[in-house]
Length: 340
Image 1 (tube, rainbow, N blue to C red):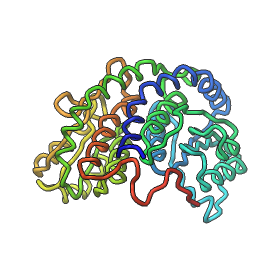
Image 2: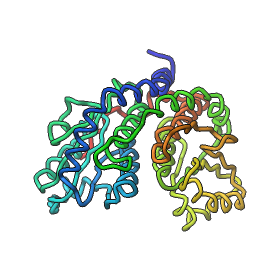
Image 3: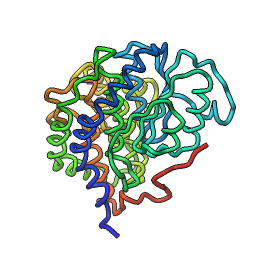
Image 4: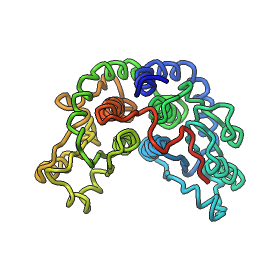
């Protein structure tokens, strides 16, 4: 048996190489699917996912709404699988995002959506999975075998793959993601900062993560990583939603992790941070040089989430070990979760 956390640490470190492999080997496949989507001309895009992949899907929802200027939604698979709804999806693109491609509810959702007229696409790390067989198109994220229960490399690979499909400013061209692998390597090289920051939460019982726009999925994924590896109660809020009620629970005893990378999303967090600091909360910023730095040189703002999560993965890993847990084997969890 490996040392506690060895698998997760190795998979975190592997991410720059995986992003480069996806950039090189996945370009032609992404371009072909992008052309098919362009020819289909969907009037809306629906994403179905679970767990970590749900956060990648949420990121893609922002991409579709902002870059493609189409309405986008996160599906409720139970509407199709439990309640047997059969909506008219003849002008919809239905995208299932799954690391394993093995969850029964996602497979059935794609089958139903296809039968209801949608163009169907699977974005997975499992090219031979049942989900791929159910969909008309498939983009392989090429992350390789992931052994740690807490997903890291499949998450960033999913986001980059989704950016290759829905990002950029031209419907026909895959956006330039060439700067991401180097930026990821440089961000991960500053591991001392998230490792030191983990000490702030060693004895914490709860914390809040927050962000806006493209970075909101980062806040949600960071909360999930902390919960599943350190068993610490973590709640994620959009910065806007935080001000609509949950701010009342913020005080000097509640630590806050705020993702505030440069750009429109970070600017929108300024008034939120002012209110949080007025409440006396301990705030850790992700993005600025005085917090957990993220290298974004030559990277478009829409791609920042692929990088922002990296120091937070490192923080979650270190925190789990500091709390005498094994982040590779969270209690009660399996690598592939079967939901219906």
